[in-house]
Image (cartoon, rainbow, N blue to C red; front, side, top):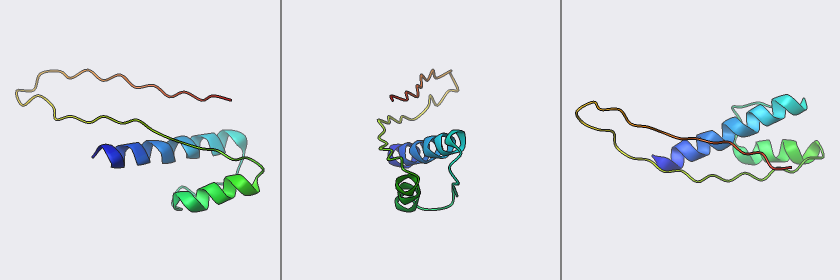
Length: 73
């Protein structure tokens, strides 16, 4: 579903950001626990997503997808 895909994308982005910042991070924890880790490290990070989902073509024709990730300081 679109909601599950959006949540997964947010979790993945938070994991990648924590890795680049050198913050210890367990990707198996729930988001609230991850948010607490970011707060204790002196960094507060807010995430959001806009997700759209659709069913693919039944005859197997190509579907084009555009995706972007933007980090704003």
